[in-house]
Image 1: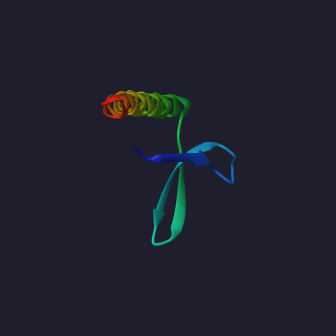
Image 2: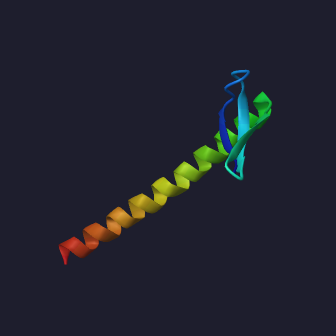
Image 3: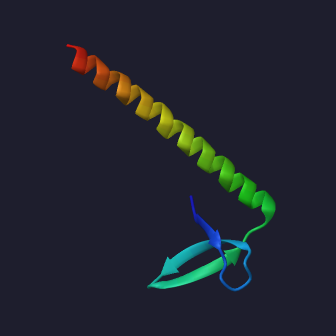
Length: 64
């Protein structure tokens, strides 16, 4: 998943890439941005589920 940031030149949302220490910005459309937000939400949900499962497992170990 690519990184999204605000372009310092135009103030719009853009994909950023760093090559040889140089940052390049590529403008993205609103539908692309919504897709990226959806991907981020899915990733966060998966992380949340894993964290909850690990918390339950930790509680089980503590109670033994």
